[in-house]
Length: 130
Image 1 (cartoon, rainbow, N blue to C red):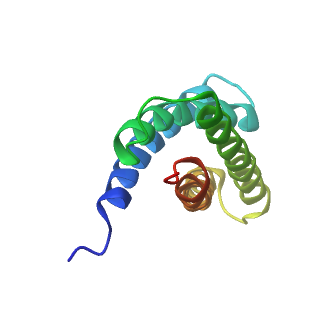
Image 2: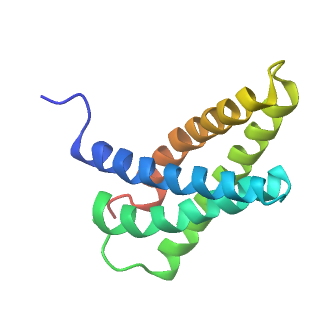
Image 3: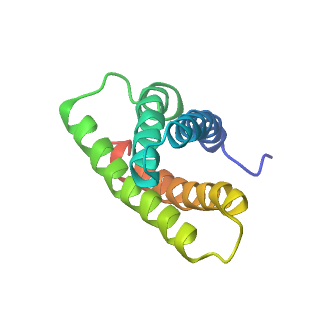
């Protein structure tokens, strides 16, 4: 038997794809000169839009979205956006490392924390079987 359930595997696939979207956008926005918090917030939201579509329809098989579902998903992502941006900023400000190393490290740690929180909230709040 697999260590991860089918739902968890699908969440990981969607999540990894969303992280690729997030990291790509973050890198581009930082290189274009946008400040770090705005870059991280914008890139996270682009990943969130992708995540909503695919987690709703594929991972959690939630069917058609409703206003309540969109609200709960948005609330979940708002909480995780704050967690993500604040974790990223805290690590950038406090890690005693070269910026070229701590930018990607901070990105992945922030992403990891928000991903764990995100899965728990999606499963228990947003897409729970009603």
